[in-house]
Amino acid sequence: MVGGVCVVGSPMVDSHTSPCVSLVALTSTRVDQTRSGDLSLRKKPVSKRLNSSFMGSRFPAKAIVSKKQKKVKGFVILNNLGGQYEDDTFDDVKGQMFNLFTLTAVSTVMNELNELNPTQHQWFHNFVRTNKPSNGKRFLHILQKEKHELAERVMETRLRLFAKWIKQVDHDEMYKDLSDQNLELMRERLLDLVKWPDDTSNTNTEEAG
Image (cartoon, rainbow, N blue to C red; front, side, top):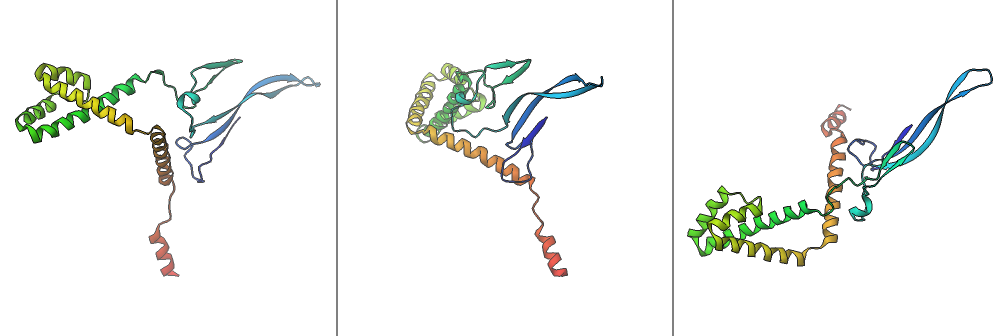
């Protein structure tokens, strides 16, 4: 037996894409013999489980996500309501941040060269077009072979920008902004599902009356 309850403030909800809370009851079947000798089937509830498709919690991800799996009488319960993430070191996220700061440093150095050294700016501009700085480490490795002093300038610039960002960043504010963005996207999805009455049809009805 599966029952679902969706609470999103609108009667029209897409259960696959909207936040829902569902109560799942697992049942088993037992065969009993009556006094008359007939066989009857009875369903015996085994366990109940509360699932949620969206967690709007303010707690950190590690407090929500657990990789442990529990086995109960043949059933496997996954404690992954917040989603599974295998790499607890977040090295991939760190690498993407380094790439972004490299891109910002390249843009900063490019603007500086445009004002101070137009000739070197033109060379660097052509180099960036040929060697995309999307992978910061690979980009700087190639740049070191071509223009060592320019590569050092980019590395020093990205380190300075990162230090400045660290002092200004507010982790609580970033979490709130990310949560607000999630809610905004879900709200837009709900509005897409709702069919509003056509103003033109209402106007025509009033004129006909």
